[in-house]
Length: 144
Image (cartoon, rainbow, N blue to C red; front, side, top):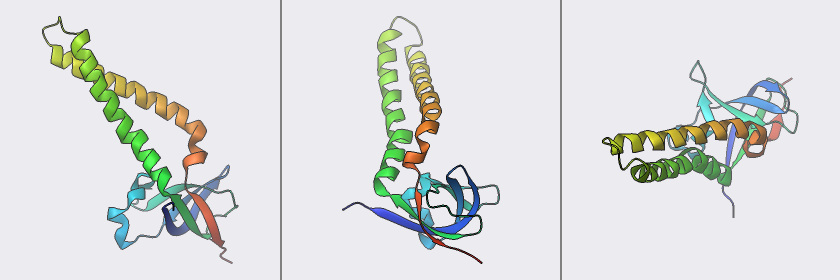
């Protein structure tokens, strides 16, 4: 059985099938595993970008569904893979720069550089696939 997190909020913005939803604060927000999707805005409100395939309008109360595998995939892409690349870069750098005096420093910079390249690649290609991993609106309670 797949884990599904359910949140409720109000649509504050919508554009091209994507909506920004202000999520109602809960006591469990600090321990929430979906925090990677939910980012505070300039007013410290938790705003979540979601797939608006059912056509919610600004001001609508909505229920959002976040699949557990999406949270796991996003966490692995943002933290797991870069850590692996950093470690591989450091170990590879020690053999590449073994003849230099500051082997450890060059190896660390090499690993950080590879990680930066990964993030640039990830961010540029993730914009095309973003709708696939976004949480989605599953219920609308329209305000009159």
